[in-house]
Length: 548
Image: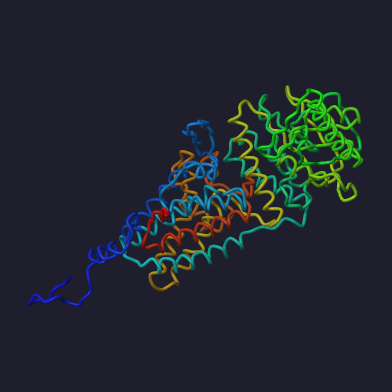
């Protein structure tokens, strides 16, 4: 307690240490509280370290990371520079770092690209905030208010710079190709980006405005080289046809099912059947076979000539289908069955008593084709004509996995652009444009909020600076040249990472999706603001279950 001059206890405010001691007295054991500067510093350090982890992967000259699993049963290795994949694989104990991982995951789900940018921008904002809080003693709420103003001005500048080319189909296709090339420039597929950009644009435009990427299947087949990949106009199923069944069927009527096609045994748990002769065993087996024959007859009665089942099909039903001239395909896993139902227009069924209520899938032809050394089934002329398959070839499973991630990002960003057809110039052009718009407003903004706005602009300029550093160029020289070009009114200028100079992005065709860039700006600033406003971190152990 505090005492006055004559040694009598005083009622004045207790010190920080005493308050912490008092809190510890009524908190359960296993509960820790970090307060004030300690809590804020812990949040800043955690978030900034996560941003530093992925920032070397940013841009067309970004580096890759090896992710090695060290579990007892899983010691697989993957090589990637996809921000969301890296952050998803890292196990964290810092609360603020988990917020960064979460915004990268949401960016990946919503837009598909920009996962590294959103984490890096959030980290840079917090780096600037740390300087303002610790050195200039500006209150976090004041910084947050300045950031909100800066975000508004940045968004206005971004909207003003956006270009909408959706009115002209040929021009819009050209913009989509440029966006796909820009996205693939920072991926494994960068050396074949023109080829894969065309594949991705063709696949997305086949959807005719639909936003269901389930209709685009990516099939990985080891062997050959990346250039051997191609777009198959149809649906490919990596399964085999049953023995003795037709290998090509035209005008297919497809019954898609999720049902057990083993011999129907007595499946009551713990049941036991006792017989006194082998004849009765044979009778039980025959009864089981009769049940399966009846089930197969019900399936054939639907009028289908192709039966695709999620589960296994055993020898007896397989032979029955062969006799009836029905093509039977087994073990089409859950994702395959759901996607098949979507692209063929059918329904997944489990019972077969009411054929009149079942909608069957349709396609023009089902046939076996060869990809490399493997046979796969091709479903051509599906009911939803936009269905297609991108077949990826590559030297190893690691290359194929990273190629699939790269292509998935391109497909997602193209789908987002089809929904919101506005586009912007890349190469650090829009970041410089937004920072410049904020700087113009700083001079007319009174109070400490102006310092926070200037810090926001500086954080935005760090993105092209990091991209230049990753390419081995002098970032300070390039960024100052870029600022000078924008101040002269060259608002389409950005970084040419192949020549190491400032150039016109409109001429180079470096374009990005407006929706992606807006999502990066909003998500990063909102997450940084949330972390900035933390003053206590309370770690609580789970409540113990009472015995008895």
